[in-house]
Structure formats: C-alpha cells, structure tokens
Image (cartoon, rainbow, N blue to C red; front, side, top):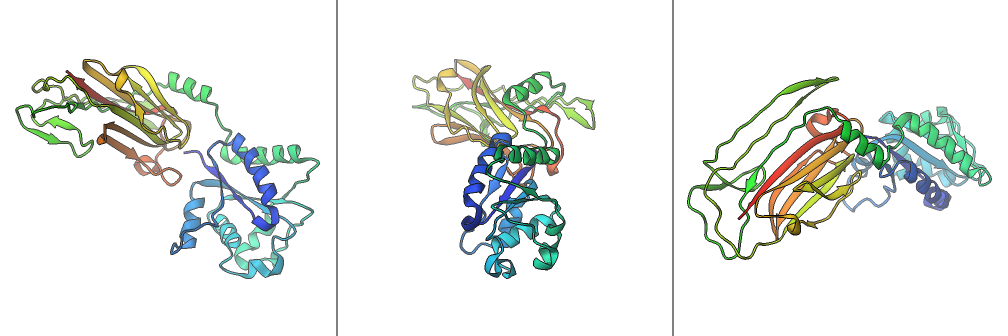
Length: 342
C-alpha cells in the first residue's frame, strides 16, 4: 500500500504557505497528502486520533515559520503541533523540516525532550523567489521515501500484463421481480453476500497455484447454477453497483462493458447498470488494481434499496487485506457476481 505524506503547520503562522505546498504535493502524490488533525471530535482521544492519521504515512513535513514556537507553545504537552511531531518521530517517519519567512531551526535545548530529535533533521529553506525550485527539492526527497506516483495509463498497462491467476468468486442470484411468488425448493441467504441462493445447488471449486516472486496465486471459482427457473416477470427492478476505498484503484464491468473506474480511495457512488443487463445470465465483475504493497477494496451490488452483494477487505489508510500482506502488481483481485434474468 503506497504511503502518504503528512503536512504539519500552524494556521496563524504558515497557513498560506501550507495551502500552496499542499496543492503542489497533491499533484505529485494524488490522494496521499494529509493535513489538519486540529478538528478532533469532542470526547475523542487526541493522541489516538493523531496516531491513526499518521499510521498511513511514510513521511512528515513540518512547516516552521517565525511564530512557530512563540509564547511557549511547544511547552504545552497538549499542543497539537507538538503531539503530531512527537508521534511522527516515535513512529520512525521521515521528518523533513521546512523553514519559511526567514525562520531558523531550533536547537535541541530549545525543544521539549520528545521533540529534541527534530533538531537533528536536515531542513529545507523555502523562499518566495525560488518557490518552484524549493518544491522540486522537497518532492525529490519525498519520492526517495514514498516512490513516485504512477499515471492511470501505467496502472492499466500493468493490469494488462499481469501474469497472476487471481481469486474469483461467482454467485448466481435470482433477481426479485414485481409481482413475484417464491419458486419451489429450499432457499437461503448466503452470509457472505446476502444473495438469494438455492441451498441444494451444486458447487464446484478449483484452486491452482503458481509462484510469482514470493507469492503463490490461486484461482477459486464457485458456480451456483442449478435450481428452478425464476418466476416470469414483466417488470424488472433497477440494479446498481458501487466501488469504493480501493487501493490503488478499482474497476467494475457488466457483461464485459466497463461501467465504473475509481482511483486511489475514491467512491464511484451508485451506478445504475440496469440498461447493461440482458435475459439469461449476466456477469458483474469487480477488479482491484494494485501498484505496490497491500490492497484494500469495497464492492456492492444493489437491487433498488436491497443490498445483494457487499464485500470489503482492509481499511483505507489504516491496514490492508489479509494481515497487510503484499499483493502482486496489476489486477490483484477479481470478484464476479452473476445474475440470472428470465
């Protein structure tokens, strides 16, 4: 999972510079730049909130202006800037001080004990006259720690050449119709997808492994296709899909047609796919695109207001799937959800 960069600053000291720098870093590291932990909800543990915010970061940039440590601010153990820096140092992040408006680096004697290590960090001095050059130096330093951002075209190329056989799960669902009467037989809801399945349906699984670097990939497919034909219908309800919290990206297909694409951590919202459905068997396929490290994802299928399929793995910006293990680059996971329409 790509690590992010956290921007630490005081609003009354360097807020204007923080906004400019945030825009520059966001363009280079999309969806990987974080700031502002000063709006912690009442009753929340602020130490826990800061640790959570920094948990997905690999670098920490602290903006230091002339008012950064004025009036003994850093002597306050509850000062949020102090807590953010102390947490970053304790977690072993790469901490980069940026000096603005003629500020100088404080000495270890001028800092609280939990910030003393900051004085040993090599600082960058920014000026308005050399802003572009100074930003380029900072970005180069961060890229050595975080890695450069790959374009969407690069991600798609990696997905196209992926050599890994990926896990896939196929689930057949009889769409609910109006008016309807339950078909004969024993039916149940699957705990994993809440999809209506025939309990006596045959299931066939296939698993095969192949070494890919350190990983062994597996393809698992389950087909639930037997059972009575669903009741006739003259009026089908509407179907929607959603992809969200995908690291590093996600895609959704209906019968081979790309219907949704999301970037790092984005949410597609509910996409109406009714017009892509046809009589008989319909395939809805979700893919997770990975650049490096671990993955996270969330996918849903909805019929009107009823959720038919709901699966997710990992928590975005916190931890990835399966113990945060590394996944292969490209299409790291693929999930298929089948609908049978009469």
